[in-house]
Length: 153
Image (cartoon, rainbow, N blue to C red; front, side, top):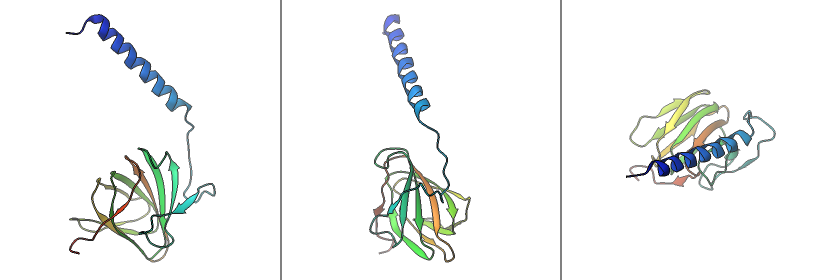
């Protein structure tokens, strides 16, 4: 059984670590950007993605947990079948995107639509003709995209 002193020490350590985390969060600057902002640094996508695909990091380090990114694909482009280690939370910002997760019906996303993709659930997408698709994605784990074979192939 724990003594009252060891419980008190544990509580103090917990409070001290909570204060340190709160201070770190308070020191971090707030951020507000538009997907058209000139200060965004757009970089190339993995080689299996369509030509012209670009990614911009909005917040965090993509090699670590909890990174937010934008992905931009040209109109009339197919995003090949792939999966992510992390779950992904997405909001389409421009264009019209048709997304198909294995075992589910295709859904059409329009600007302002939210979508959730479970970790390791293979999927593919198509950005319709007309305008480029820009998608905000929040990753829980480090950012990755692993190409995979389409079902039935």
